[in-house]
Length: 452
Image (tube, rainbow, N blue to C red):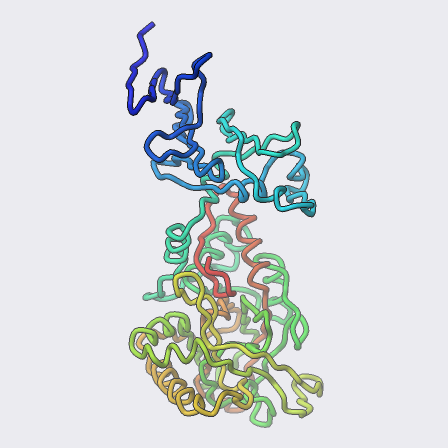
């Protein structure tokens, strides 16, 4: 065999053999393997596994392990590893959920690593003061997927920011969604990435909206209006959404802590004599980004002032079976997350109740709201859609703002059925279909408060 390459540095001997680097130090009675870094005077063992290409080291007296994953060093703290062990004692094999045992002392959590090795594509760890039969198991692929740190967070937050839709919304044939999982997955992707999509050619009859949502997208989210509601425009309607006049850009139901995420409009009927009534969709989150650039002081106000969204009229509204509405929820218009990325957005002036802020913030807030409203109403990127009977419009209610231009009924009838889906339920269904098709689900932010 070839003799190993040896070097001596400050009394320590480095031996490299078969792709494995060891640090040895001479002892009186024998030569033993020591966890020693001669340059930093701290414990360190370095091992290269050629089969996996994974290089790792223990550092900071065993308080962390550094893995060279895809050429990049990734730090994993011992306390983090102790709380994410994949062995059957720590993670239920059936459900995949962690088996949590309340710690009896801080040493149960803030432990150090005694030794580690890589075997069968897993990092195997022995912790100090741990049960002798316990060995931490951490799949290398799982560690790569869950690398953490400030740079990772910033990159994930940046990658999750959606790109504004410049062209026309994607259109799908109803029959294709019915017959093809690939077409249905592409519909999910367009809703996630673009914020909206159109389905043409569905039956123009009542009940299709709820059926389509449940069958092809997600279970319906119950709201104050039940599983869904029907908008029939009338000159005598009490609610503005049912009147034929202009309906400004807004989100639906911002007075919920969990705002309905995915909204679906199904055009059941539109008489040929009706004029106008086009739907206008604007990417509200993109408007907010432009607002940040053009009016940074006012943007800052929108992130700090708590606005009271709600319905508090005490009126019995015939369109809603004479139900009385009392809803209230405080939230800023814009919520920032990691690296100041916008993660939640709320805009619906018609659903704002009395402003309750410090006196010195009243005028600055209304000045900021005026500037945002002006930017919104004259925004250069608007999607104007005139739905025909059988058309389905699906969009992200947390991101996209919708409005309706004035319409003239001329004795005709316009009927639209609406249903909602919870953002998390919708995303879960999208990921499930992606796994079935061996595809990758987009990681675009959905503005439900999560930065990814």
